Image 1 (cartoon, rainbow, N blue to C red):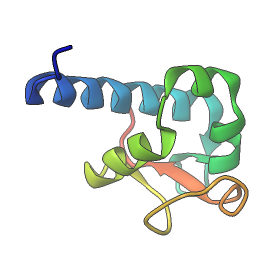
Image 2 (image 1 turned 60 degrees about the vertical axis):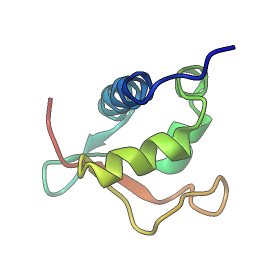
Image 3 (image 1 turned 180 degrees about the vertical axis):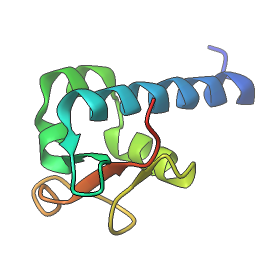
Length: 92
């Protein structure tokens, strides 16, 4: 079995981050600042998101590193962080 190359992994992360932005737009609503936001618990418990993202938390962290989204803290855990807002910083 071949291991994926760096370019292939980068493309997968880029693709997943793009899908994440789309899902935040689908599930979220505009906050007081006019930015789209969604609660982590809503995303985590959504069937479509569960089917799309093998590692939702990893995809969220990648999008945060790219400054596409914002959430408080470094890591989100189911249950503990269900009410944490994930805010979309870019509008596509």
